[in-house]
Image (cartoon, one colour):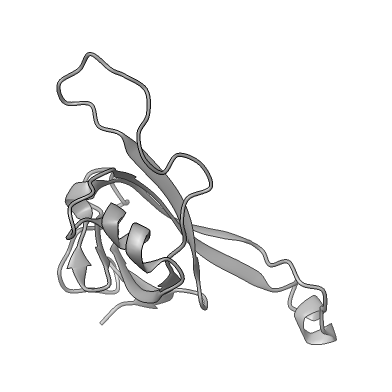
Length: 139
């Protein structure tokens, strides 16, 4: 069995490969907040909310992930996370797919601290909510 490494993950948002722009991609899970909890939800342990937490470089070019957040907040788009980097999912190296709602960051959107490094870049962090639990794709 191959454990998931820290260098192979690839990510596609709305059909665009954004792996080169992203330094962190995490599927999150937490208890969903609701004013109404049915007995069925309670019996199942409560409903869950799934998110896609991303950290990516700031790039105002029209084709960038940052620019997509700037211009398309509130839009639902397809997300495909390939933790093993493989192009075809298998039972031992699955993909995870779902629909997320693009939202603006709660924090730094543009700019940041000075850095003497010539390779340092400003970054933005977001957490987008999946419209349903992501699907584990094995075939």
